[in-house]
Length: 333
Image 1 (cartoon, rainbow, N blue to C red):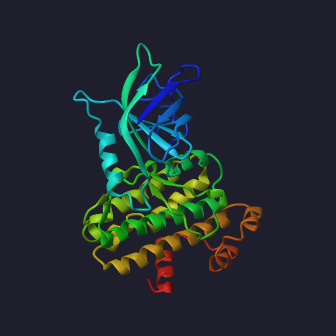
Image 2: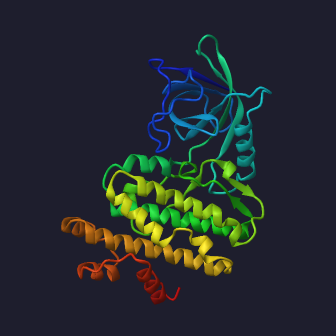
Image 3: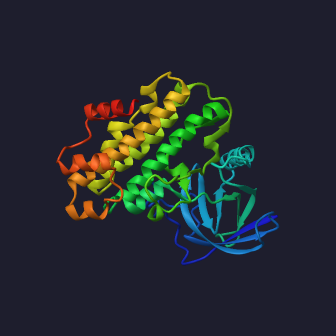
């Protein structure tokens, strides 16, 4: 079993361009190029052959390439000949192989970078499945232009389901950690999303998923709240004001929601979390429709919940804490 990487292109060092946090950062292994040829031999479930791989970025001391439905993570060995990040993630992938929220594990071993100068370079490589575009990358691609209600619905739905996934881990003995946007991905296409259709997500760094008892609600509050806060901050800092509006409403409705709910029983917390995300979607849609053009409102009326469309037409702003409390009381939450 072997993996060989051949450098191609003009020899220029690879740089991340599609990641919100990493744009402009060079590869950790300096000889790597934007495009490489990956040669696979004898690895189960992957056909032998040569594949063109493109540089995705770097993280956890590794450079990441994508080809087809696969991800290759390259890590330099340390002074003791070890590759701690790849080894730890490989173990995590093996332990969580039956979970739908993690990717497949294929191979861990030496990778030869064959035409590196002044001589071939031996690094460690982790070959795993592709979990889709990360939320980090989606924000980078879309945040410079106007946020559509379709994209907003996609993100709100995805993070509602992620929040419930973390909460359900209490009963399933699955603990999560460091669910930042760069570690969360989805194979779903935002352009094909319809309101309230599911948006299943993948945790692309398996070190963030552990099979262990994680205790009651307060033990997962920090993980879930920080995950939500990460999206809120990126929306608030995005170049286009429509994204800032979503960040504002996230702060009003779901900021630190898990800590706020405290030690309530799991069923009650689950229902309140779902309800607050639904209220977030309704409130953002009403405010968006009220602030942007009449033509936008007409074009996107398929999304606007009926009960908030009437308030928008009457010119009532929606989005303060008192409004949120009244809306919750109407639903009995």
